[in-house]
Length: 471
Image 1: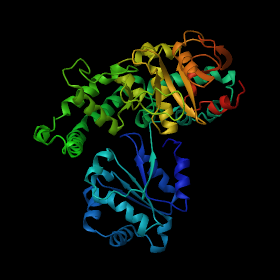
Image 2 (image 1 turned 90 degrees about the horizontal axis):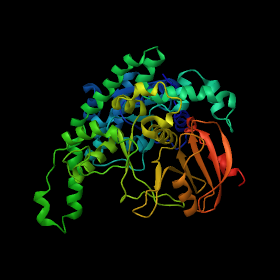
Image 3 (image 1 turned 30 degrees about the vertical axis):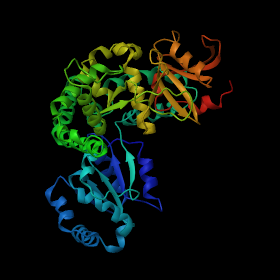
Image 4 (image 1 turned 30 degrees about the horizontal axis):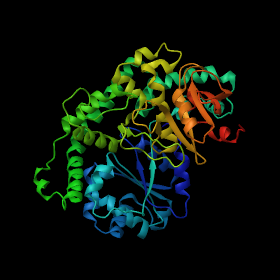
């Protein structure tokens, strides 16, 4: 069991006086079940239901009202009625029972004392069968692959984790943190991979684990693609039917299984590139078909669509008219599927890996793990402009541009364009070097402060420190 950062949020939920049933979300194989089974040790009693097991799912089919269901569970697990407040009910793979999902609201209304957590793979695709989803009666918590801070804990390097939070970074710790981050960049953060790695498996043995994980994701295609396609087409029909009644009969599901498989296979080769849907992966597929497949995969959290922003002031809004980037669940899986693991072993500067695309991808993965939102990158408003900043991060209602570069010098043309267009006068460059602060000037002569930081600080961006730093 690896220590996960969300454990503190679970404890806050456990001790809340206005606690609601909690839905734990996340892609397959990121450790949801293990996390909650470990968390259940904090309770006097616990009930574990896996709705992929026929007998557990039957509980919700057999007992239609919640009081009878609770009586059945108490009797089966020998839990005194007065001990419900000391009991955790964990409903795993809840997507297998739309009835169980709908029941969550009644736990909040009728049995608020019992602690209820639900988790499931591909949960978003099960919600279409829920007639009465418990909106406002549940809470959500997201789980991601292990980030670098969690990776250090997995290695029992609490000493280095302490150094990671220092501002500025201690030069004595820089070399070791960078070396271990390179290792993390190679392996990624999938719990099963790291378990075997910590137990001493080499990269050849781990290849079998990666292959097994990837095969799991590919085998899921049959579970979600057809229904997702039908759901979106039905929604489109309902929206457009009053205006395009004559086209309804022509709007049939286009069977995206093979298209999604094509996308999964070819997508790793689009790392850090903005993608065009039409003809994706040198195919003959149409924009609509590829867009549908990518949006379906976005729901699974295996591949995310990251749209850019053209904003230069808070709040950030995505620009859906611009081409998106693809963000994969885990960089280690991506390295394996792309066949670049061997080339990473000897690199001293990961900013040079995969034509400079690997580190921005990994830092984006780190930001997702710590902020739960969708990270943005910036492109200039002008359609013909090539200006593009790797990441834009909001802090205290200000937008901080973040560029990932190899070396302490070099062109920062796009970052300069953002500074000139915005009211911001502070920026971050992430690279393989050490921490430094410098006063700079854009090409148009605007002065700004540039903070150069090591690229292993994705989970501990010193934005508060930079915000408080006088210009």
